[in-house]
Length: 447
Image 1 (cartoon, rainbow, N blue to C red):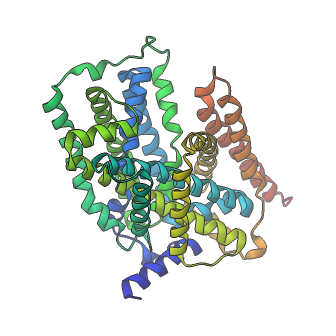
Image 2: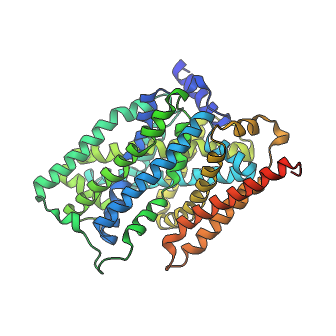
């Protein structure tokens, strides 16, 4: 094994075992390039276009702008805490919920990252088949999965930062070329700025658009697991820029505006439809653009699916296998899911898991605001096995109460748009109240 490979294997093992030590932290540019791979998913272009058609362009833009602020603020707070502690979502969840809750959080994170990896891989496969029609779709799936999994062997410190650094300008240039070629071939019309749903304006359409983006709060977990690699002296940079508002201006607003324009001008919706149209319009350049966008986001999807699958089964079944074996298992699962054609079921699963994730964010954010230095987590995780609780009743009560409220509202069409906000508010309030009560009991010597 080469020295670089040994270093990657050791770093991958450290990611699972505990907090990232100072010697394994990444520089500003390296972590920025690794993280900004998340900004280029075709999903961000397509979801904005879909919302514009359902609720109007103006409402979609308002929803995106509010989401930029929300994501930027919350992820800035989470990034600071993750950098200070070096903890992963799995380890931090042990503090919040105990060992059982941490296992559940890790399972949800693993499954969600895997599902998104499946979606983005399917886009790459469709693009490949659109350019090479003779390639069977199942073979295209296999090529995409093998290619994607090989990229995440080892650790993000080894070369994912370099890969995404090279691909970033290609992505930005490709997005610009796609817009320019569309204007050249179809002409420019400002109709995309005034899209309205067929049935007329929807009341409070901006609210529906904003809450739709709450369904992707899994990015808060992504932020946590990436930010932990940041150096403490770079904390402000990462909180304000790398994981903050500037990142989401590009990810949501810039990509969203481009997506609304392209979908309107090309007369298509859905990721597959947009990709096929771009390949037809740009030829080989369209194929390269699709693969660059999806390669960048899938390095994050498959990396996080692998590390969380590793953490889940190592803790649950005490399976201590090399990190690369978990990457292969993630790839195999993704391929089976793609062959089974269960995408409609995955969408439903993501809706349910999204409620759990929003509740997790509510609990996590309150805990961080109560303990911004992170010293409580360090004490809890180094106190010895006897101090580790299987269940943390305060955290679990808040998490499950928030989730239950969200699930109840989600199944009532009249108030479904309040599902995610209610989940966040209830979980936050319950955890804050439980934490205050727990603190009072400890001071009184009753707990």
